[in-house]
Length: 261
Image (cartoon, rainbow, N blue to C red; front, side, top):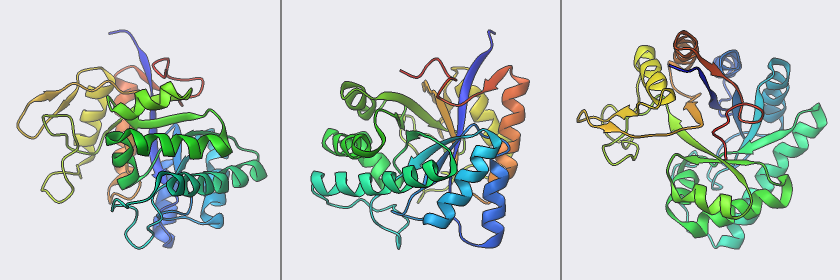
């Protein structure tokens, strides 16, 4: 099979304990892009600076990870916000990371909404548009990352943004292509070998295997590993090695995957 490239990303800046911080920084050894929490669900100026400086040292692309303003709930509950208010919230968070990045000599290359905002934007054009307007105000035409095959990608492309479809290496998919609810058993893979197997399948264009054995077609430009999973470092190491063994190069979206539109 012809070799190809894919981006491997993770969400960082979400943990504050010493062990968590150390594990987050270890993940940078294996990924090509990082999505940095910028104050909505987690993160502050200190955590952003720490992650961006470490990413810059390792040549990892830096992206913003804005969310609904919900630190207590980690951004996992959808909020009923007027589009203009949501636009302001997104702009403020992305601007905070842009400021930190400029200060340390890095560039924000992409934006990936977090949690409930990610899923709301994937379902509703109004939300996707508000996200894009907020991003555009402070970061320009960066790459916007959303679920592979979701309407949000078309909305963002229509607004002049480059886009990247994302798949999750460590999450179980349902037969309709949606992610299995975290409230259900088996929603998150905890075995690094399982995470690696799904990553390689998706990167090869073979789709993901749903709970009932159905093959779910997923075309992705970037693969995500959640940085807050207990086995995140082991999973990232396994994915990195498995992709290399499969002849798939890990490269950031900017200057990397030709699949980015």
